[in-house]
Amino acid sequence: MENVFDLSPGLCNPHARKGFLTWGKLMKKISSTFAIVLLFVTQTTFAQSAKSIKFDSNVEASLKTQMLADLNFMGSITSTHATPLHQQVFGKVDGSNYMKWLTSRVFSAGKDGCGNPNAVACVNPMYANKIWITTNYIKFSHPQIARLSVVYHEARHTETQHSNWSHATCPTPFLNDKGQDMRSIWTNALLQGEPACDITAFGSYGTQTILLKNIALNCANCNSKVKADADLYANDQLGRIVDAASKSAMKKDFQSRL
Ligand SMILES: [Zn+2]
Image (tube, rainbow, N blue to C red; front, side, top):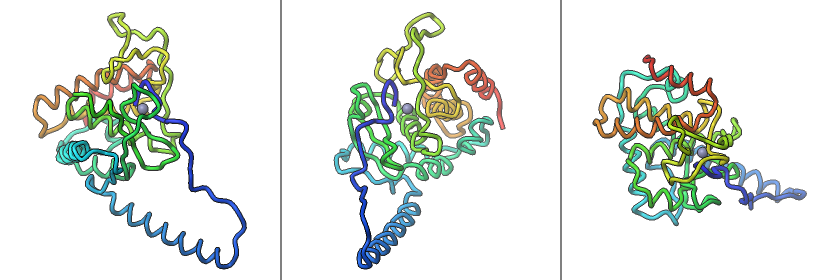
């Protein structure tokens, strides 16, 4: 995420093939295509629970265990309320809803540098339905609900139909309400001029904020620490929305309850 190149350049599709087909090759192609379709169907069906997310072999067992435990918590959330924007993007504030939303977008996870030392995580449009985690994600000591919000931020980036919700450039200077430089809550990196902002409420920062704010406001079975953490990170990530109308609409949404 952030400050960085969620959409890491430089990786290409090694599987592209061109050329004429003989009958034998055609049959082979049909059978392999059929196999791919079957695999896809199997994978789609399989990827309906957090445990079905496939981890690359370079993801440490401890990281995998932590991510699955985080997602297990996410799957336990209950509520009877949501804000209208949350309803629009995620549906109800509800664990099974959150799991379906995530596992219909993320089928696998790997570990990578994401092309920037300040990156926390990223996606690459060449690799559908996959997210990468960097060592920053592993090193940082942010709360569980903040870690989860990173995963949902990246999941939003997997949506190719919206050009992966690529980020806007943060303004220069980029100052908070107190006139101080805006810095990343994740890495403390300076944000001005970086592709680490959004102008829409529906991009990765906006939806991450909507998710966090709804957990802060509406989660029925979260303890006070989880709610306080969610609120703190929601308020910070709201600062990444640099379009005044979008930010104002989000603030108004957080005053509403369905
Ligand atoms: Zn991002």
